[in-house]
Length: 239
Image (cartoon, rainbow, N blue to C red):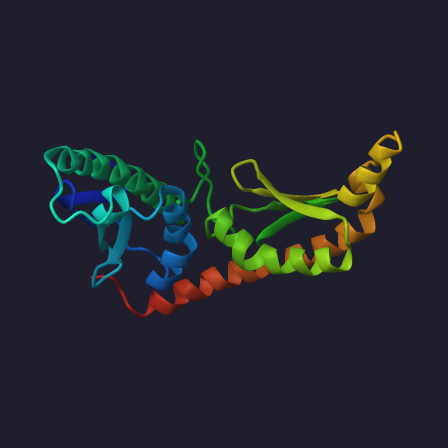
C-alpha cells in the first residue's frame, strides 16, 4: 500500500489500520467526514469505520467483520481468511480515495485529473445557458453537494413544475455543472399520440434559468461553507 499523502503505520489484517497523513486535513474533521468520507463509505458499504486521531494527520480505519460475514461468534478458518483478504482490499480502496481527496485539497495547479478547489470569493468563472463553469472543483464529493445543496433546490422546483424532471450533471473533472430538463408527463402523452418528443430544454428554458440562479447561489454557499470549515482550524495547528 503506497500513496502520496497517506502513510500506513500499522495494519492488522481483518482488523484495523493506523495511518498518518503527510499534510494535515485543512478543514475541520467534522466537515471532512461529512463532505468527503461519508460519500466514500456509501460507495464501499458498511465494512469500514473511520476514526480520526487527536490531530488532523492521524486516523484509523476499522474493518467491520459483522458487515462482511455476519454476526459469527466462532468464524471458520475460511471466514478468517476471507476477512484478511477482504479487509486489505477494501482498506486499499478507501485509502486510495482519501489520497486523491488530499491531492485535491492541496492542489495548486491542475495536473492529470486533479484540479484545485474553487476559490471562496470567486468560485464561478462563467454561466452559459444551462452550464456553470467553475474556477476549480467543488470542495466536497459531488454526492455530498447533491444531497446537501442541490436536492432542496430541485425539490422546490419539482413542486412548482409537476411532470418535469430536472437533473444535474458534472463534467470536465467537476469544473462544469449543468442542468437539464425532461418533460416526462408531456412526452409520455405525446408518445401515446404518435407525436415527436419536445426539445426539453428549449420548452422550459425560463424554468431552467430560474434553477440556474438558485444553483449559482448554493455553489457560492458551498464554497463559503468549506472556507468556514478551514477557518475553524486555522488557530489550531496540527501537531
